Image (tube, rainbow, N blue to C red; front, side, top):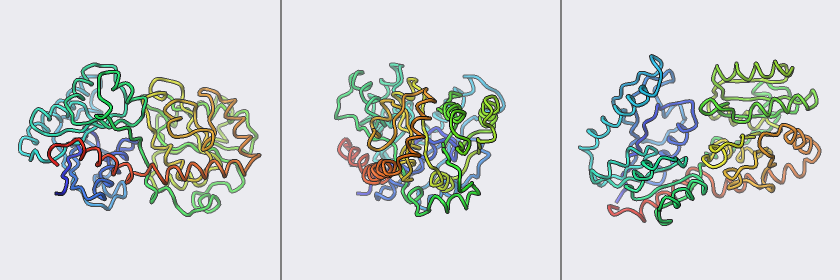
Length: 385
């Protein structure tokens, strides 16, 4: 029997944020594993092109249902706006699912969706953080199983009384078709109009999360202590964040050596990563970065075969170590400087670490491999399949 799966997400799709990539790539991977998938999302205002399959360059067929919601974002602010949008989406979802077969699996990243188990659905929750609120775990207990993206998150669930066999730890992943491309450093720089001679430090993805710095400030500060021929390039920022970091670069007199670029499609990000002499993700030491993340950029970096400089945090250590990357203390521009100098002086070590990172991601961290493990877990825990 073909598995039928409803992937439910109270999300704006498409979106510039990483969760949109994760949702669409997961659906694509489920389809490739012969699952009939319907993505159920909120019908929200969007300045991006409406065709999500084209936006994410996903040819694999799965339908997208957009449920009505009251979207007041951009008109007003505050918690009431978030509550109104969420409440109206989940109300639409409730009435829509009343007419759906209970033989379908519901897969979601949103805890309120777990209440659909009370209507007779089997619900599986994918969790990307370990909330403090006890109500979250009460809702999660209604599910048939929980998929967490890091062991640090799984430990929190176990502390809240979850049995280990109800949990699957599966980090995020990468699409090798997009990021493992046969393009040299020189060719990628020519295509992107980048200097062939400069040593370029590259950061890709959103510059901030919930308004908090993701380490780009440390990259810019490190640049002020490095030779003039070293440049920093960051791709994926909002207009507000670009202005914020441009101001920092100006303040410490490195603005001529910093290039800040807005959102770019995945295939273009792959070119920027191939153009790098080093890829950086020096996340700060906060609860979110320490314990509640599985950054998609990490797996994209690993697929690029370029050296990685990453913060020494438990969430990073689950995937990378000193054999696959250059691990530095968080919040230390000086350590970034020292590692950059090492990368410049020891190409053999650089190639070895990058090669091991690539082999790891190719073997264990693709979206297709992730989907197969999740589906095996779902089949094992389900009573309707």
